[in-house]
Amino acid sequence: MNLAVFVKHVPDAAEADLRIGPDGRSVRAEDLPFQMNEWDRFALEEAARLKEATGGSLTAFLIGPGEHEDSLRRCLAVGADRAVRVWDESFPTLGPAAVARALAAAVGEERFDLYLCGAQAADDGYAVVGPTLAVLLGVPWAALVCRLELQDGRIVCDRELEAGWFERVELALPALVTVQTGINEPRYVSILGIRKARSKPLEVRGLADLGVDPDEIGRLGALTRLEALEPPPPGREAEMLEGSPAEVARKAVAVLREKGGVL
Image (cartoon, rainbow, N blue to C red; front, side):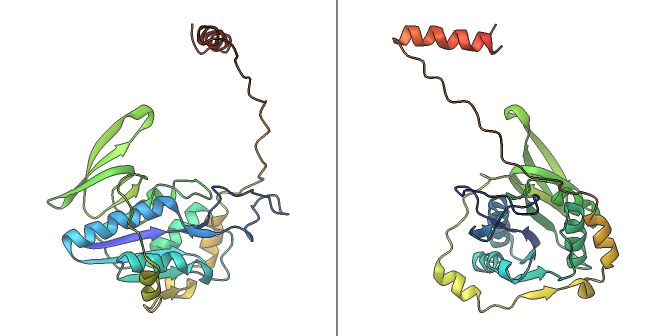
């Protein structure tokens, strides 16, 4: 079975004090550590498990400059056979449509049985690159997949919906899925494994290699524009309810009624 996984290198902002850049549309990233996007780690693990169970090959794709190669090295350390980095200095700030177009061009004439992406990226949260890529590749897709199983030339997926609901869908292969966190437990990658992966070659492809018109990438990149970023407004201080358990319970119910939480 031939598999493809698409990953992204993003800043780790979970515990960082974020600052907005001078352009007002970006976060200052010079002091932030970078790592593979969390959702992509689960997609990579799922792809590696499928490869181990069925045989075949696994190819990892990433869009980004050279300093983003650490995420591709992690893919190789986990079990990818090939790693392809797509980048060109003429790239504008890529919107999701342009990212999907560049990735589709990187796939080119290669054909894979299953394409896997993370459900979304931690830095922008668009959650549309995977579905857009599926349309460009001409394959069926399912988003927010939390369980998948191969069955006789098709894939059976459980999708996470709102309010705790799930949906089961069947897709004929080839297909694309975007993977939700929690679908598996990503394996630990040792420092030795990453060092060994550094000796493996990486393919680097620019616009000329992809055969993509720069004007097309620029046009697609302009479909969405981030106008401004601003920190959330500070909230009010918490109100502490004091008294006996019965008094606190009565006060809590009164607050809920006042705010419309209960009738």
